[in-house]
Length: 359
Length: 278
Image 1 (cartoon, rainbow over the protein chains, first blue to last red):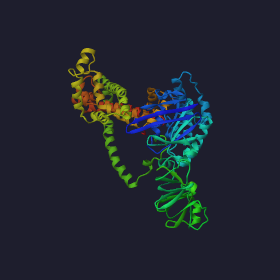
Image 2 (cartoon, each protein chain N blue to C red; image 1 turned 90 degrees about the horizontal axis):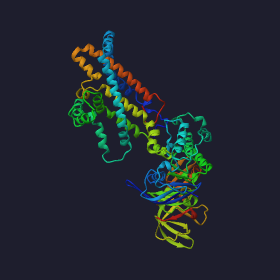
Image 3 (spheres, each protein chain N blue to C red; image 1 turned 30 degrees about the horizontal axis):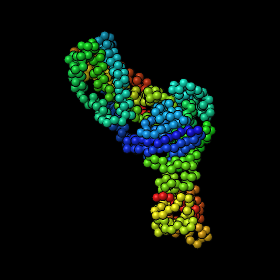
Image 4 (tube, rainbow over the protein chains, first blue to last red; image 1 turned 90 degrees about the vertical axis):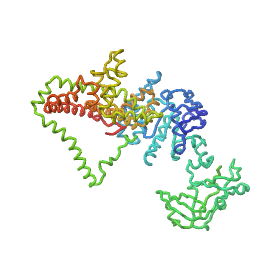
């Protein structure tokens, strides 16, 4: 069964346009929509929830055409940044209000037991607490219990924890993922943080400028971004413009600012002319000089260290190889190699880790 | 929405001692300037004069009329001002700045001017006053309705502005969440938005009430009789001198202060409500 089907959805909102979106979400599936700020993710979510009237297209939730229905009849659970709890009510009243409100619109609605819901979400001890005094985790659980009280057919999550610090975000992400799996929820999760994608999603849609530019399984999309913009959104650090020189046999030669890259030719990379070379920072290894033993198929690029940026266990090393190349190394390896700004270094990139994209 | 965070209250703990000292000195002078005349007014009274004046039916009626009219004014201001405040906070339309400016006009118009302008509209021969009296028997001169009209004109901006700020402080997405949970638009506003904005709205209504009680200029021009307390005090000042007038003034001051404190307590005395701080 399809939990959500969006067909040809278009919308104009001021200067902003949502362009011809079509995708489906299977039952129990979590689709993460990844895109930078201003890509239209929130507008898309709000349109699915019923807050903007689309110019064209249809929205089906659980097979019901809801395009013309108001938000209260769409049966969606909407989680927003900071969770949108009603701070004039207690935790229990938040949940109870949702249970009652749903009964108001639908006759057949089974009113859930508020106490049981609070126990299930581990917030029974907070029954009479004000949402203002809750920790982020407790807020999330209250928001989920409240959404559950209205029996949604579909969860719409709009960066619910993007305002939190990294540690809280990690905890909440884990907990949210566990909850969504437990209740076999169908969910659309919108985020600008690619860390959320692998942790929560089954599939990922990359959104840019009001359009979905790539949609697929997470492995697929991360391995093979459809173009430079998608690669950038997916967090690939090194995106270099180059020119295809020769394609001999199974290897492609690409010249980037005077340096030559070798890449494997995969399906569909019958390429000539301008291309974009994409290399993840963690796929770049560094050596102090060019004399080390190396596999013949590795790209070797001589350069100079221009910056070291320690990030705890990892250190980001920026090299000047005629172009800027970022490598992500274990901090202890950086110390072992004796790297410092100004030091000469050789970047070693396996051929298999050089991805050739449309520019 | 930042009301949900247990935020560090910077203003209470930060600041340079020298700056705070200067602020205390200048601010203290200002507080003294506000309190001294009021205290002087109260301590200058003798119990005898106070009781005698309070025993006068005229004076008591005037105080009751002032309080009642101000209360009605706050109700009318709420009924019409809160929707306008919501419109200004949430609506997207051309000329919104203009509408907001119109709301503020009564604050800048001298109240005698307001009284005369109102007289030309609601007076015996006013463009609204005359037909309303002829066809509906509703009269604005010499009536409670006229007092409320005069009070409303000068005091309604406080309700609109305070409620607008309160609404603006509520994340529209909270209303969206309420809708997705099954509430219709009116229900969402009634169950979620209004309670969240309650403190700001109550502040505005309290200010409208207080401003209405204190109104003299517009009221005295549109409606001389029946006399509200400020008009009565002015009348006593002209006819009986300072002593009686100041006793009535002290009485009015005590009543308004008591009500003001009561309303503030009603607005703030509940447990924390997000959306707008004190």
